[in-house]
Image (cartoon, rainbow, N blue to C red; front, side, top):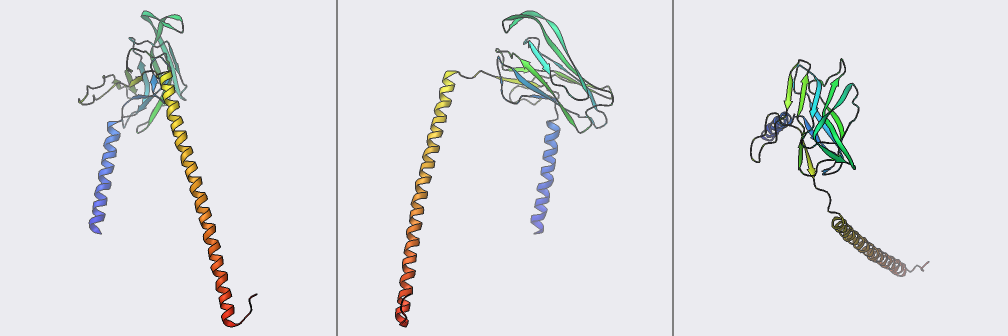
Length: 247
């Protein structure tokens, strides 16, 4: 028993160390979407900002939008205790959005904490944007971000993703991954086929279950009837053996 207890304690300690290491490794400013971001469409982007300093709070965040892939529409969700400012810049080459020529687009989004407000040590906050139309000629958007602490320290999360097999950079930029549009009619037909097959299988399974239930129910009634017959026969034999008339 002592050996088992000692082994459990070792495993528990190892798990705590592993979880702590994973937490440190993932404490980056990141970008995520509630569902895959489709090229040419719109999406909500959540910028998650952890506080990595034990003795200072995060009081400002500035996100830079890629000028090579301008986004005509960028709107922010209010965050209690924070002011947000979206600054536009003139585009080197106009783009077309919803049939209209766009000559300038948002270039930076800056969140600034109100006095007395900050992301405390050991905490994180999330900042939401609605952006689009997303570019159709790239698979990802880099969103370099600077994080300012109450101590005056500024941390730049701007390193591009590492090549396959290489070590992750210390301060990677948040990345918004993009996926191709759905396959249209073919995809719809495939989905319908799969749905039909699943419905057929489910119906068959339900039918099989009902049939089995009927058989089992009938068998149960038959067994019950036999049991009553045997019981009645036993009573009659007993009364005959004792000379008592049957009731």
